[in-house]
Image (tube, rainbow, N blue to C red; front, side, top):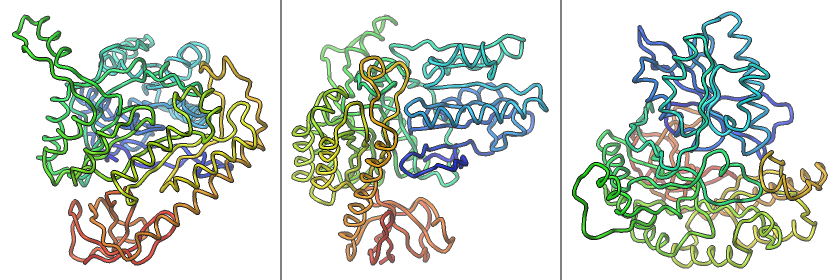
Length: 489
């Protein structure tokens, strides 16, 4: 995670790990003479990456970041609409910010991201909780929107672009250790999963020029970064051809190439991996319908492409997957898991997303999810019960007919089984030597470092004379359900 943003805890008496929402806030970089910007980001890595772009855009307009909302001149909430809990948190935070604004009348409050399009009228005009509403493709316009508010107007831009990738904007990376960074390789989503709002809030899928991605990776490595995560809603559908580049050149009346080269995700992975064997490559998120053997072979053939895949399944039942519009069935997902194990081995880390209590799900279909979990034995999972999101296909086509207590009970069964599998998978590493990239201190002790192995597992060990950003070999001697414990060798 880039240090532009740091963890924040929202108090919730009914909070459970399975229902949590990741939240990050900006750190202190503002200098004398700069207006102060506070960004609170919710949800996924894409949002956190977008916040780096926003900070970069605003830095060019004399804004520096702060971690203290009480002293901010400009507050942005970068929002998520994937789950109801995230929206509830955002509304709670807007109430807090508006209380602060009563003592700081010049403070500007804006909502960015996935909630912007859907709630623009409600937040801006009816409830009057914000001054700015900006969608994910309008961040270049933020300085103008701030200027509109400075001039006494409201600022709004929720236009969804067919070609915006922010490829030419260097994100502000304020990571204090400068070890890990995110690179956005595409935006939007063409999948129409019936439970998901992303296609409506982030627009159509478009891939970024691979040469700009490789350039960014090289620059990061030269700056001392040793790990990059390639981000997209569905990275496996990444596709770029020089034909796209040629169109841009023709518009500028430049010479174009005779041959058209097509770049797949597997080819992009290889290009980024070849920047340096000392630069680790991760990626998220994969889609079961699109992940190819070529991607798996790229991972196998490059030691610095991490041996880890996040492959959301959502349900283990084919009928439920069909009404979710996931475009694969149970057998297809198992085929992809079998390919991962065959090509990459049992040590490859595999994580997932799962939803309990989707519309019309029966007890038998819920048990299919449990049995699929038994087959795969995921290393980690993000687990939620279904919450109907306004504007989705499921909200229009299906009745949310599973009682909340049933959803929660099924979710708890999924969580309990996942805990069991995570512990089992971690125990397999005991006695093994793991290559670890040190990315921070243990949360419990400054005398211990922590880092991740290739399979994305956190390993904690005494720091000895090692340094942050260094690769070390660690022999695992114990584990918990979520962490490996070891000693450097």
